[in-house]
Amino acid sequence: MVNYQQVKDIESVHGCPFYLFDRQAFLRNYDQITSAFKSRYEKFILAYSYKTNYIPYLCNIIREKGSFAEVVSRLEYDLALSIGQHPSKIIFNGPVKHYKDIELALSNDSIVNLDSWYEVTHVTRYAETYPGKQVKIGIRINIGLSDAAGQSHIQQSLKVGRFGFAPDAENITKLLSGLTANKNVTITSLHGHTSTTDRSIWCYEVITRTLCDIASAYLPETIEHINIGGGIYGYMPPEMSRGPVPSFDDYAAAVTDILKSYQWAQGKNPYLVLEPGVSMTANTLSFVTKVIGLKQIQNKLFVTVDGSAFNTKPTFHKFNHPFEIIKSRPTQQTATYNVVGSTCMEKDYLLTEVTGAEVQEGDYIKINNVGAYTLVLTPPFINSAPAIVVEDAGTYKAVRTRQLLEQMFCNYCFNK
Image (cartoon, rainbow, N blue to C red; front, side, top):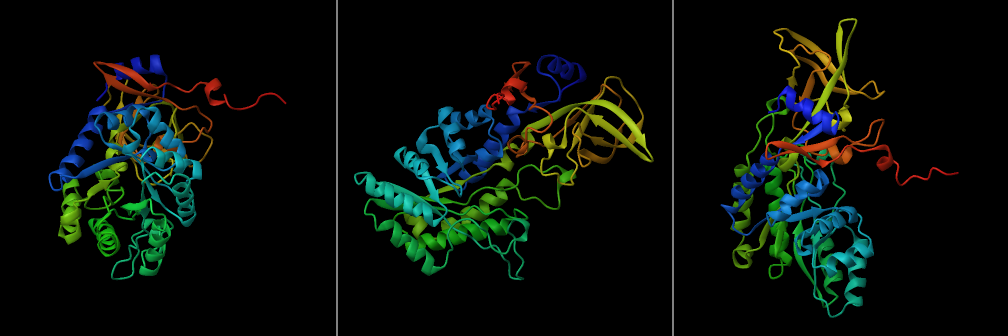
């Protein structure tokens, strides 16, 4: 919790609006997830999803904890290396990996999970180029999530997901034959991340069971990692909840019970990998924005702030995030209003039809639970990127400074 004077002090140094990172909340999420899974299955790996929020300061916490980085592009892979993440603790996923990317990652003994057939060609080329190298490779499995009623639980209710290899016997047999035709290639990882509509326990049971069935039928002697992907719920504010939210313990109990029930797993004792993103970061970042003005149009009260919905919900979903008013002076009055942003877009609503303490020019609004995907999806649109600050020994330091014009346009050519 920050008070008005603290916010004023931060603004005087770092500008406004700004993000406020809660290091302790991030550490709590890490500890709770790890405890839930490790208490049930000792060989557990937490691989933090860089794409969800790749603040280097945050990623460094993961490295210091000895955990893994999960990346889905060469950009993210290079970021992991640049902060000192050990290459063997990087999991390289994603649908687009060029040969040079795969060559680097395999030479570094990173875990590479293949998504498409063209990557099989890359691995074959690599294995032939480096015949003395023992190549451990992973494959991503395309997992169907249609229930008994035929309802799909894949993101946006898609009937068929676009990632990974089809799990039917003919396709898997062809895939394994193609890879292991190279005598120095061994398949050691199965990956099953599937973005779901509801993040339900049932979805993760299906993912775990599908991976274990494939491991049991085709690869019982070589699989070292069962990777169920990410997407599990973390803390969910009541304002944003659509119903009951499973706990970390709920997920862990369901997944580990299935894994431990397989005879091959009892003998092989593979690592169980989880790639959390939203559950690690959503409640660790807040956005502080200043009230610039108020105006009444017909029966609507609009509160204009110096931030934007791009900073809090770049997908423009319809939920209001939990928020706090940080007032310059106390008032007992309440009001219903819309908090609107600094862009020229009509839809730039940070908060819609909320009732709370009356606001005045110069007040601040702290919008919480904005740590997942906001930073990585916010475009350089109209405004430069705000600072990110974190409390450190009673003071607030920047882990990202406010973007200046010369930084924003440094790779543009100004000459004709």
